[in-house]
Amino acid sequence: MKKQKIIIVAITVFACVFMGVVDAVIQPGYAIKSVIKIALFLLLPCFYSLYDKKLQLKKLFIPNKKGFLLAAGLGVAVYGVILAAFFIFRNIFDFSALTTSLTSTTGVSKSNFIFVAVYISFVNSLLEEFFFRGFSFLTLKKVSNRKLAYIVSASMFSLYHIAMMIGWFGLPVILLSLIGLFAGGVIFNYFNEKYNNIYLSWLIHMFANFATNTIGFILFDAV
Image 1 (cartoon, rainbow, N blue to C red):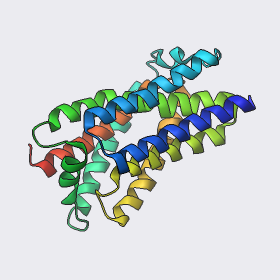
Image 2 (image 1 turned 45 degrees about the vertical axis):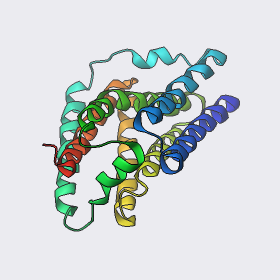
Image 3 (image 1 turned 135 degrees about the vertical axis):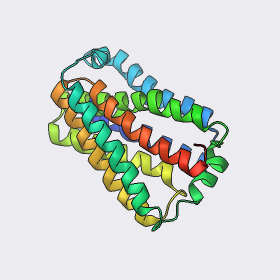
Image 4 (image 1 turned 180 degrees about the vertical axis):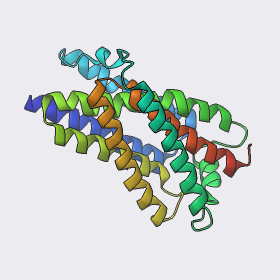
């Protein structure tokens, strides 16, 4: 158990640090970055499962309808809170550098934003739920303890996303985002723990991404 715990934590930290370097330092195009992310967040845990047969990652994808309405309601609430926060703070913090940074570092622009937004909302969110909630939380919880699994999953989830935001916002927005992302990670973990699958947290995650994509449309003046 101790060896499994160390390996799962090590894979989680390694993948997040590597992706952080890719996002903040290497800054390839969005397509290349997505391929690297799939290799780290999907293939790396799958390769490890070939070594550790007890992981049974396929069970993470077994559907469970329990809690669906609650997750949908919470997702709508999250969408509203994120949008409200944007409109409240848009005149306080400078968001003008975001679109310029996205275009220059990842190639995301007004012309391809719709495609990227759809990918982020449906595919990327499922990839992150599999990695952070399925692998780094549910799987880790089985071989360690509940507290460690919550801390590792939520902290790595928040720090990974902060690495992507470097250069987008000033320090106050970064700190607010860090707190919000950690809290979001804890909420996602709760749904995974209660219903033992990743679909409900994926639903909430999708609504959060719908909100950030809506903000992106506004900033890119694409609506």
